[in-house]
Image (cartoon, rainbow, N blue to C red):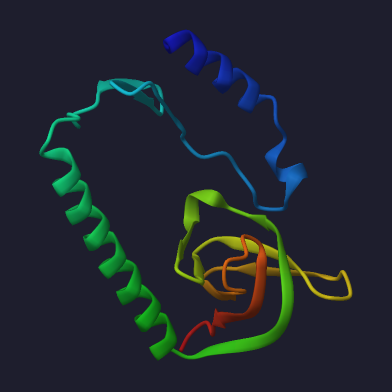
Length: 149
């Protein structure tokens, strides 16, 4: 597994991330085989055991994650923000700083959206997208935080 991790690292080092997208840069990554993981070059045994207790703990962890996400969404909406309605297709994003809860997508880094005319809209910082129900890449509106408020 260490050999595969090192090969992936070498491949990633060859990529000019700034050329892909201004301000884009690599993040630490993990390689996982079900029992062990290598994260940012550090080998570790994974403490999760797949016994009868695990499903109950997963439910608890997922429930806590959902609660945290709903709290972040409510806090964002209580702050000053601007909202633009329309039809937007996601054409770029930072997967390390993005999550979806139901039909709401929350980003803390950047998103690139294509509007109906094909123009690219770049969002940096915190943004909230109201997704077309069930769609993986189409938003009906986006909201961005107003800095300094």
